[in-house]
Length: 241
Image (cartoon, rainbow, N blue to C red; front, side):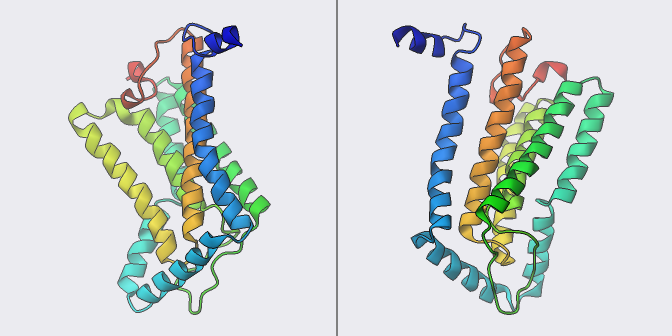
């Protein structure tokens, strides 16, 4: 046991500390997601808060078409078509610049993340909020919020790839702006009445878990290829830029 633990915590071991930290990071996200999923599937007390919040937000925006339009624009920035465009353009630029592995990271993160969202939606099979005179509609199941999940891993992956090209004095502001945009996208789904609060929270948790796993896998590959480890605030591969 002592030798096994030493290997797991030894940065010099091939599958040592990096894999252990990856497992811990995913576990820290998985535990609250599991608790949230239990509330949703077993109709826990949180679902009553969900229903009340959905109705109240819906009533607040019924007579404010300008707010609805703004929320629809923000919501679009978290939708699959927009991300396919962003990831496609970014991946194409990276391929053209001779960085195929970074491009592959974006493509795999996007496609697999979308697949995970679809599988969980089908497995949970939660209906969307049922409201009188809805201001917006959406297809498919409700849990988790695909927009929230996609914005979490999508903008997160794009930020990690392009962070090295952003001047250091602007990085903090860009990171804060990205986080605020992700939060606004989730809020827009609530205001439009197409998701519950637990859907949005579940989307964020699942998106963060997948971003963590995908990024860790890329980082482990870097070290396996003899490249130096980098801190998250430096981006995925600062040396290529």
